[in-house]
Length: 398
Image (tube, rainbow, N blue to C red; front, side, top):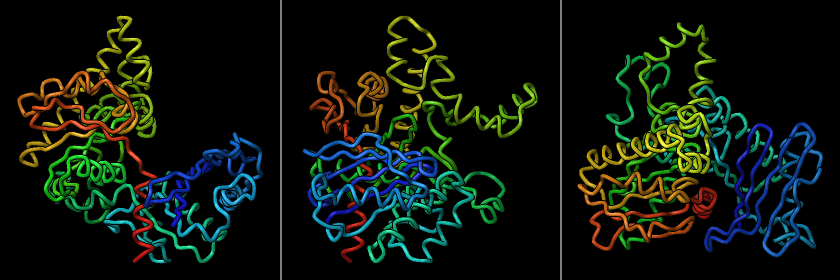
């Protein structure tokens, strides 16, 4: 069974067509400028690539239709007919407390996703638009919602509650939700396979390090704590996001600079992180190049990032009472050997011993730790789309 995976934005739509059993990617691409003019990209092995060609896309429905036309095209497609698409898996950013796993979409599910819009005002409306467009263009095809937050719904209250007035939780649902759940779930499953162990037996720390970064403690296959919080602004410093900070800074700087709260949040989300600290870039490759030329702020930004990740690794090992493996994934985690080495440096006391030669690798599954390392260090490229496809296929088969 082939699964179409959809990640809908407000004016864009990413898609992949996958076989979840074999893991084979049949086709992928992007619809851009939806509601403006429409640009369509399509890539498939052994087929002609369509690169940002003009296709009118007044709404997401036309974008979905363009995807279906391309994958089932007589000459350039990858399937003979639409009947070869067994279901559609939709990435949905926020499921609040309503969803602790992926679900088949019905009217009640759509209503619950709508109810979570205040928690993800930029993302959930676009996700809903994508779902409704697919329902219109593909009537009768099963649809599944896969939530970024669902994997973290196994956290205990001591991990997800903030020490704030309890009414804020009861009335406004203020709590830690966590994000990147689909990625953390995927790499935790792959780690168990690589180690030849059952997920239930393992204590893992998953480091999803990219422009957005989060660390998750996975105990017995379940998320028990994670660094992002009520929003994706919390945790370690990121490309342009501050990560954790003293909330008193907000009042101090807003008073001093005459800033409004929306200006402050824009600064914390888009002008902070390693870009703000380095005064160079949010891209870790630029930081590495600048640091190599003697730029002290760029070097500091690298050190600060690695230091904060290392603190979370230590904290989560303490929270779980040990750790069997540390996983590096996502853009920086998969490709930046210097950052990986900096994170692991100083963790020898808890049994982490990195092999420098093994760490000289990019973007493929590998064991990075020395043979005598008590705690394994793993590089596992994330594959959120495959995880969405696997979840979708499993639900449709039930």
